[in-house]
Length: 266
Image (cartoon, rainbow, N blue to C red; front, side, top):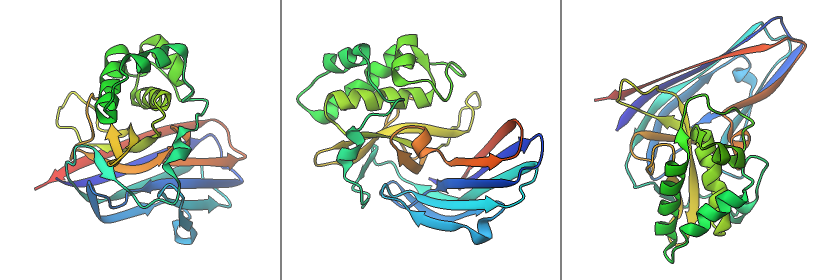
């Protein structure tokens, strides 16, 4: 599937600031499931941005503004061809050892209830077991828009029985840890064809399995990533994989607007 993507993030502030710095992880890279034909980022400071690839394989840019305006617009766009690999990505030639993803964070800390769910689907075949975890999470945690916020933990969302894609991914990561399976948070895009579904930035998880490497799982949609997915960045949880993170000095409250347009090309 050939997709054209445009992702615009607009920040508005009550007043101009004295300094702003952002880290952008908005650049997808080639892997078994996708080929990136072109990709550009338009933002104040991009012409002098520092860039690097971190130990997890994420491409990052650091932009700064000495006298930022009351509005900041960051636009990422490009063309990507995707393939359905059943979620299997294999080795992504990263520096980091997959075992680091056994580390818990505040948002992926487990609970007795999550551990009990994970134990209930303990199977001899790791791949079957992780698929069973995906199903168990999808059954027990309903997808409900705006039912959580950026600070909601896996334990809190599981106890509430509702959440969004961020929560499903955090719960999946916590449950995998109960089986000593490294798992991580992934951000990217999902192209939808149902007019009743919103097109937006999406999140899912990946588990590292013997003989397969990294495999994607999306409990929010009860499936492994297909050709409708474009992978962008990964991390331990939502904050560590955030597409944009930064700081601004000398301004008031922030208003955020995100617009994503994904079109399938013939």
